[in-house]
Amino acid sequence: MNILITGASSGIGKQLASDYLADGHRVFCCGRNLQALEELKQQHPDSAILLNFDVASLEDCGESLSSLQSLDLVILNAGTCEYIDAENFDAKTFSRVIRINVEGTANCLEYLIPMIKAGGTLALMGSSSSFLPLPRAEAYGASKAAIEYLARTLSISLKPSDINVSYIAPGFVETPLTERNDFPMPMQVDVIFASSKIRKGLENSKELIHFPGKFTWILKIIGILPNRIQQFLITKTLAY
Ligand SMILES: NC(=O)c1ccc[n+]([C@@H]2O[C@H](COP(=O)([O-])OP(=O)(O)OC[C@H]3O[C@@H](n4cnc5c(N)ncnc54)[C@H](OP(=O)(O)O)[C@@H]3O)[C@@H](O)[C@H]2O)c1
Image (cartoon, rainbow, N blue to C red; front, side, top):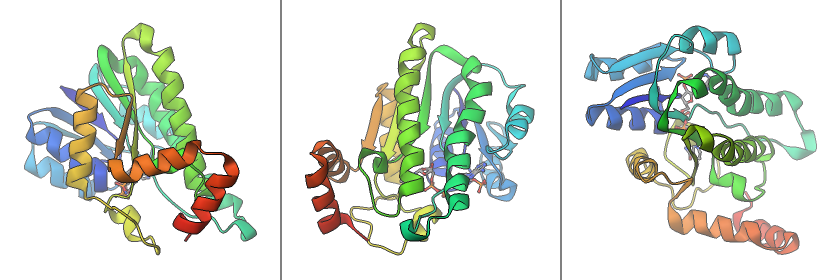
């Protein structure tokens, strides 16, 4: 397959790129950190193609992506996380997170949707934080709720073009992004587990891929309860 993965220089994206390359696929590995991407190229010189650009810039995306041709699988995984102190709400922090996670995804979509083959797959990286409101995740959770909506609506709009759309909603995964967290991260999994769940879900054309099940099902169930019960449970059990 011809596969494109954004955020392939670190964490979940790097593991996905490495696993798909090991399985013999051709992978367009995207990221800003060229040095980190070079590791994939060294291991798979013939099948790893490096694309070095900032997803937050539509112009950069155009320069790097517009000359590509048909793709079987596109995983828009690049993202960041910053937390909000609601009492001292910082609009710039909010905007940085939305710019990379939401606008960055949209910038890639403009160039990549026309390149996805009929029968191909588009996967958007969200988070299980989109299932319910979590303290301090005002920016991150809002960005992932936007991605969830985007995935669900694209899934309908791209059906006539025979493109499958998957929304990926992990719980906590051990990566440089979560290393910065200063609170307990229940049922955290490693990137090998995350990559295996994502690849299996995509292979089975799942519209929603969430893991680890014990954690994400609890969030999903809390997320459908009446607001007052949700808030009580979140404050008692998940607040940090
Ligand atoms: N780890 C978790 O627990 C967890 C849980 C749920 C969802 N997720 C989501 O999974 C995705 C990957 O996260 P991770 O945990 O693997 O984090 P990570 O190790 O920090 O990786 C983030 C990746 O995104 C890329 N990226 C960030 N900003 C970018 C930009 N402006 N332009 C281009 N690339 C950019 C980074 O590449 P460069 O540094 O090279 O630019 C890096 O490859 C994110 O969307 C995150 O929200 C993670």
